[in-house]
Each structure stands twice: as C-alpha cells, then as structure tokens.
Image 1: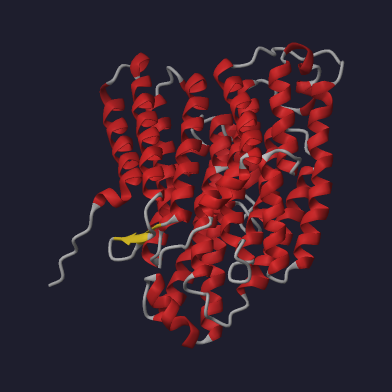
Image 2 (image 1 turned 135 degrees about the vertical axis):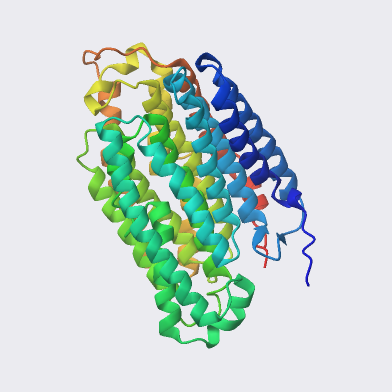
Length: 472
C-alpha cells in the first residue's frame, strides 16, 4: 500500500479560495441581507492572502504536488497572481450593483469557485485533473451568466451552458483518446508514451482537448457563446467571463503542448497557428460594426485569444514563447478589466452613442477608456504593446512569420472599432442621461489604466521573472 505524503500548503492559494467559498456559502445562509457584504470581505481577504502566497511560491524552484498531478512553476504562479488579482477587481465591481441583493453572497461564492477552477486548470498536469478543473471553472460560470434572472441573462446562461456542455463532452472524448494512446493520464508518462503511439489517435485526442480548452478561452471554434453571454450578463460578470477563464485555459493548453505533445509528430504547432489566425480575424470582423459596448468587447476578446495562441504555437521553436505568453496574459487581463470597469462605471450606457460628450463631464474616466482601448490595440507605452512585440518575436523565431504578418494586419484593423468608441466619448455632442458614474468602478478603471502603462514601462524586469522552466 502506497501512502501519499503531500503537503496541502503547496496549493495554499487554491485552498484559501476554496475555503473562503465554502465559508461564504455558510455565512450567506444566516447573515441578514444588509450584512452579506461580510462574505465579500472574506473573499477579498482570501484573494489578497492568496496573492502573497503565490508570490512567495514563485521565488522557489519549480515543483509538482500530489503525485505530479499539479505543477507549481512560473506558469502556475503567474496565472495565480493574475486570476486572484482579477477576482479582487470583479468582486469590487460587483459590490455596488449586487449590494443588498437577496443572493448577494451567492455572487461572491460563484466568482470564487469559477476562479478556483481556473487556477486548477493552469496547474493541471494530469488529464483527470484537467477534466475536473474544466467542470469547476464552467458550472459556476453558467450560473453567473444568468445571475440576474432576466431575459438577456437567461439567454446568455442557456447559450453558454449548451456550448459548454457540448464541448465538455468533446474534451472528455479527447482525454479518453489520449489515455488510449498513452495508457496514462499523467503528463510525464504521456510524454514518454505518445511519441510511439498511433499518430492519428494522438491527433484525434488533441483535437478533442483543444476544443474544450478553446471554449474556456473563447477562441475559434469554441467562440460562439462569447458575444451573447457577455452582452446578456451583468457588467461585472461580463468582465469576469471575458477575461479570467482565458488565463487558465491557455496556460493548460501551453502545458499540454510543452510536455505530452512535445516529442510527437502531430503537427500541433500548425493547427494552433491556424486557429490563432482565425480567432483574431473573425473576432475583428465581428467587432467592426457593433454598437453595443459589451458586445464589442466580447468580439475583441475573441480577437485577443488569437494573439495569445501565437506563443503557444511557437512553443518548442522559440525560447520567447513562455515569457511572451505569460506577459501578454498579464497585460491583457489588466487592460481588458480596465475597459470593463468603465462599462461598470456607466451601467446605463449600453451603446457607443451613450458615451457621447463624456469627456467634458468625466475626463479621468474617458482618459482611462482611451488608455485601455488603445492599449488593447497595442499602443506604446502600454503593456500590450510590449506583449505584442514579444509574441511577434516568438512567432518569427519559430518559423511562423506569416502568422506575425496576419497579426500585424489584424492589429491595424482593430484600431477602427476601438476608435468608433473613442470618437463619441471625446466629441462635443450632448451627453446622454443618466451619466453619473459608479465611483468604485470609475476608480478601478483609472487604476487599471495606470497599471497598464506602468506594466509596459517596467516590462523588462517582469519578463525576466516570467522566464523560467516549467515543472515536469
């Protein structure tokens, strides 16, 4: 009989988040409605403590926990910090609109559970843990999409669930095929067995797993849910759905191609490169003529997945792949959450025209919007600019110069629909009413815009930290 002597403190950020969610669920059952904000405080404390624990773990050597099923390395540490910090932002964005709601505590609990699933995705080094993490990241998110129980929210949750259930089955089928090919579920064992397995079986398994992970990331071909789910959800939920799950899904995909598939003859780099080009192109085409701001940002997130897939396609062909992916994930999360914070600050401004004349009354908010939108394009000195330089370099180094050209063309094209939003905001037209922003959200928007610029200026030291060896 083998006894596993594992230390739960290796997963301290995840343990804190899970314990906080359970405690919040219990507290929400007996706290009066006007005091359910205590659950938010507990959740925020868990996230803040988790960030400290993740930063401390990042200073150590890469390692694995629980018989190698979970990796603690630069990839996991970066995603931990990004997701936990992003969860803090989402909790703050949701405090004002959900304060006093009969299900206020449930909102905080669902956000934490979805974030926990995202963290488990990022560190999973076993196909079984990958499947469990996918479900944990997905089921709470379905409930969040329909949290308001109105018509658009119900439609958003239904579409999100149907696509997620379908691609979840595809993911499980892919895991089954990879297990059949490698006779194992642990990534190191698969890395030894898959090179000698039938290539067609490995390729079919990869396609299945890729379909499930791209659903979580919101990339082609699993992108159909994104516009409707983001548009129909409450703004804080939309900010979460469009940003944080991407970090876990793309980290999981990177880990999959970097370890089990590294020695196989399956042409996964070319497949990922094609999906990257399709995601950025279709996302841009979809965003061109949108007038609803949340729907525009939804298509923008699909496009951004294309850029995030570029360093994954370059894995194994460029040493810049890992730091480029992790830095761009961080830069994108900060910038995209800043754009959604502006949307949360103006909950009654649904269309581009609703932002007309905003500069005269709220210049700081408009400046934050401009920084975040142009930051998503990749305008210096924002963080996304440096991130795009790194992913373009990784793509060229690995032989995907054509992909870098496609990405550059799409970057220029994306400027069109971001300017369509900026133009009415800085115009002299009469502002729509009501236009009083929600102060906490406005403050978060300004903070995120400042962080995007600061991260871009301090990109060198950050990239040096991110350049580490993943655990095996």
